[in-house]
Image 1 (cartoon, rainbow, N blue to C red):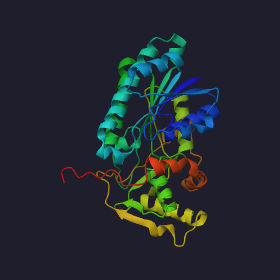
Image 2 (cartoon, rainbow, N blue to C red; image 1 turned 90 degrees about the horizontal axis):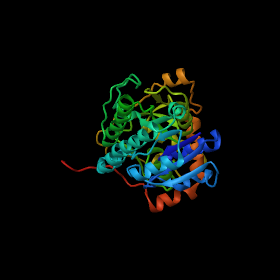
Image 3 (cartoon, one colour; image 1 turned 180 degrees about the horizontal axis):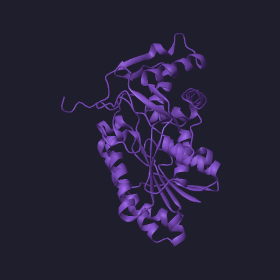
Image 4 (tube, rainbow, N blue to C red; image 1 turned 60 degrees about the horizontal axis):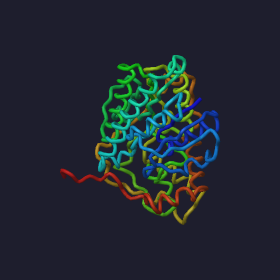
Length: 352
């Protein structure tokens, strides 16, 4: 089984690559442009493995995408390449439109042409897994869950660009017959997570004695999914998911942001104590523009149809995550020193 993983040097992508190479035994081509969030250190566990190779290229580069298809001859495409941070999309939407929309279109077109030329057996077995987010659904009220039939209602440039890419993938399946399967996941966390996102940002700021920023009053709710649980689901969807269907992937771990931050502080107080509690570093800051209040995924379709279950609770997963960051300063220190030091992103003053 040959699998091409786009965005495979990013957080979720690299976790998927490690799983496919080390656990599944698939032959994997990691395709990544190595933008700020792509990191070859994320792939150190598969470096030198005979069933893994890496290609530095941009999914918007049609010639590079075509060459990857022609030389690697994949049986599946797992498409994770994307600009993914809401805050960055507020002040730099153009990159999100380029990568998430134009890049997805470029990849779909290359995949369609490649798939059409396969022999009948390989054509029947080919799959294109388009990986997306629950943010395309917008914001939930106090009750209810996102399902696969929830109408799209994106609030940020990021979620709008992902909604557009989802619609493109669906259209290529319906119009051209390309065997596309989709997934939409809740908030991921775990090892190798770039430190701009909430959990790694809080962990590293706490270790440095810096303020722990909480947007608004901290009441926004997210459903947290441990990344290793997510990648098991992705491979299962790519392997057994029905063409033309979408599967929601969630951890059933709803938490208010303030409770997540307090929980991280509690664990750090135990594992890395300081003179006073890490909670004393919590600082409430101006809320993000267009900040959705609540996300929560109903993963029943995935659970009932494909038999997937999350193995980690939030309590077990966050303990593992914090322990990993404490043990892997050699991974995160260069990022904090040279790429992103924890400063506030996504503050837009246009029109104010």
